[in-house]
Length: 95
Image 1 (tube, rainbow, N blue to C red):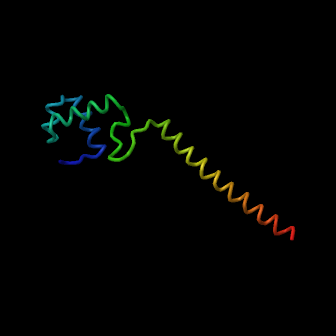
Image 2: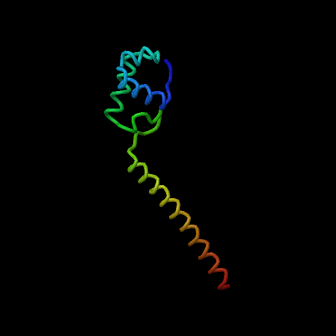
Image 3: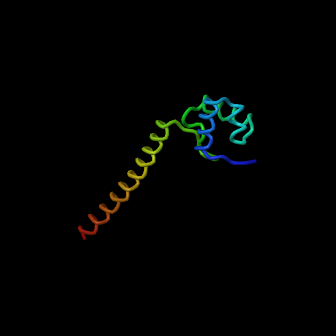
C-alpha cells in the first residue's frame, strides 16, 4: 500500500473535479476507489480531512483553544514557582 501526502491528495481531488474521477485516477495512477474515498473525506471534514496518522482531526477553533489552555497551565505553574521563591526569600530576609 502506498502512502500519499496531503498536497498530492488535494491536487488529485481538484483534478478529479476538473477532468472527472476516472480520467484523474488513470492519469495519476491511483485506484478510482481511493480517489472517491478522498473526495468523501473532503466532503465530510473539509479543510481538516487529511491530518495525518495519529493526529486528531480538530477544527481550528478547538486547536486554538487547546493551545491556549496549555499555555495557561504553563503560566500558572511558573506563577506558583515564583510565589514559592518569593516566600522563601521573604522568610530568609526576616532572619
